[in-house]
Image (cartoon, rainbow over all chains, first blue to last red; front, side):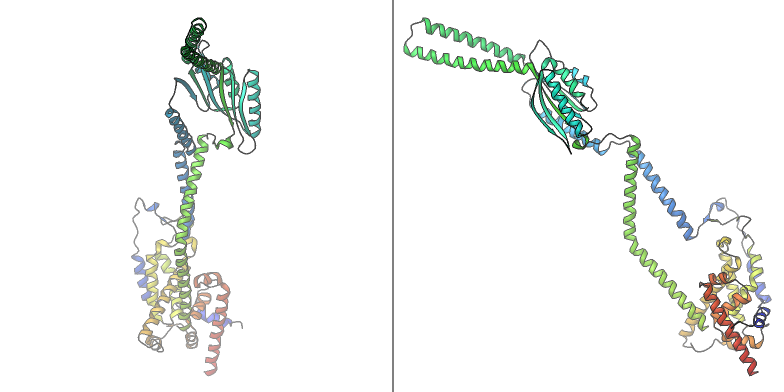
Length: 354
Length: 177
């Protein structure tokens, strides 16, 4: 049913007008409207409705989180990373252990860390005029498993070319590839060997130690000469002097002991001379995966890493707050919705009955 | 974001006095239809403008017109009064009794024919409200819907029902006369 135009017209024609006294009251009220004197900061006062505040607050919070992460990341990138600290601690432990081992003879040791040049081995040069025991420990890093195999093969070839030999070799390929090779090379060629082996990869660590054997050798030689002289005297007495049976037996027993000692001394001399002739090199070839080593990062990388760490922590904290606050927020939301629904129903009821 | 003062020139920056002068009749008419009591409508109109003056700085012209804003305050004021009145009547156990003012005094004041006034009295406040907004104050459907918190379709339905009821009451009055 369409409402009659007359009704609409009548309703509009009888549009209520405010009585004069009400108009006067409202005018009086409007006249009391304070004209605010503009405070210097009043123009800066922002009035933001809740929804708009949220629209501003969320990006602001995100920007703050990013800025904090950036600043903290930049600040913390100056500090050594955990990996570097672990490496330094491991090296300290190793040094402590080495210093705790009692030395039987004066040992001259030079240790070089990562980045050492092959020429660093020159710091200890063999003395051609003295018998010396030279040993070197060398760790080089190659990129992958194939690099380990190649390096091991080149080490064996180098050893052979220098007139040395392999004492032991262990090569592991695939995941966690590494090689451990013990070589002996002529002392005269040890520097050449170290230079060649160092070139197989990037040097992780290098240690060369020299122990003087000349004193031991001299002592052995003196003792050998003495024993030989005593043997000669005893042989002469046994051959030239008339001796009773008991004396002859005692001298012969002593002669046997001296000859046994001479054999031991000769073996010792031979061993010491051999030790002085050949240097021992322990070569270890590793890959970054097998050592778990982390390549040194640039400052930008460290900054980004630290910033990401801070962001992760911020996210964790935000998530924790969200998890804790969510039930309360849900209760508040449910309360608000319930109250709104109740008020709507109440309004409808009031408007229907009034 | 809105700056409290000063507002940009393209926004409505009229003074409270100007707006009050211009919209006083609208607010009063709306409240008169709502309450069907001129005295009460006057009181509530005053209260509406007092509230509006207190909140004047918070008015954002980008969110609506002054008229819609003032009518929303007027509606809220009227509903508050209805609530208070309902509680009072319940408390006094006179829920069935009419407010003395409703009976003794002319409801809509001058300008209304006796049959129109009687027909309007028969409507509920909700029905009178939609008639006031859509017919008398000539708000459009969307503006009315936003003010009442219902859909434009619901506004249209409610208006149609109210006018039909009004017309029927007036025909009935004519028939009796």
